[in-house]
Length: 197
Image (cartoon, rainbow, N blue to C red; front, side, top):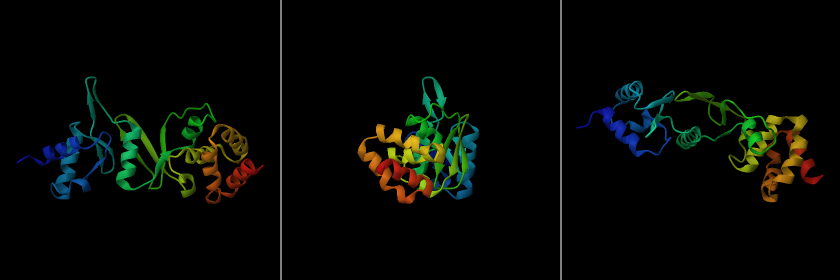
């Protein structure tokens, strides 16, 4: 019979790249204490990466060596596993939409869950709890616009909205206008001015 650590590694091999592995998902292999201890040992040996409290990832092996899975894959998998909404932060959204040339240095994501940090090899990903309105529309382009506008703030929102109205397809801008009632007053007013003049 395979040892518990070998069974955990076999389970990890069957998961897609970046899929988080937690002790709760391995309770069919043994009791909680034994599973926790085996996961800890596998992380010490470098066979798994400890991404955060109770969350482990399988390292990606290629001909160039081993590395942590991509941040995007790990964040998507964590969101699916935990049932959270996890999206890019306002600075990254503003950069992606061409509203700023600043490129965020740190990996920061907004989440509906609790704030925490996740380690992916040498890179630290920060997950910050955000108000529900910033998570409106998820990862869709209109949702990116909401987070970008929140990051820019009330002073720059109207100018940015005029730029977005020119750049975005009408359907996407319409989605942003339809979400206005869920937004804070200052942002809803700016969206209304941009949409209806």
